[in-house]
Length: 268
View (cartoon, rainbow, N blue to C red):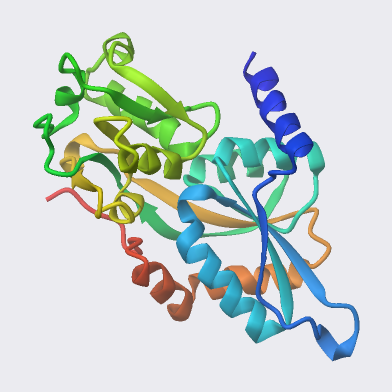
């Protein structure tokens, strides 16, 4: 059923022409005035803000057309398995890069930033949510990522398990499951839900309409974000240069500029 569900999502994207792709970087001149080089970058939706700047800067500096495909990490993994094409993969958790390595899809890889799962609530926190167990209160409308589509969905189930919270209890208040972490923030913005669990950097993007409620590091599970070069890449050397750029001081500064953590949070 899992594979069928993902196949249906991918088919719908193709039919509707909403594969999540966008271009960025480059001036069209290409190397030596010939055909412009191109890289296809599969990127988790929760990383879109720094990724858009990274591809713009790298594309301009190297005369490269960067084509980005933003979607849930699991959805992107399914696209890679089906299409066996593209150059770069940066999902919301290194678990997916580990999977790609096991499949023989990834060569070079680097860890580039960290995500901290965070509760996002309505402005003013009218439901008085201070931690995970408050998400189980009667009347709380809860939204989570779908583990079959995005990294935050998989991660949050593990966090509930770590803290001894039964999934059946969570489901009593679960009113919405999203395909991307960004969509959860949109639901808070639209006042459709009382609380969602997102990445810390994504929560900061919705501070105008919501408030972040941090979880103690000891109760949380930090996500490490890796980027990898796909083995099918026809421009592997160029793709490796992009990975090096993302991991460089300049690339790391772009993550930090968009409030993404570049050092791993530690428990006190």
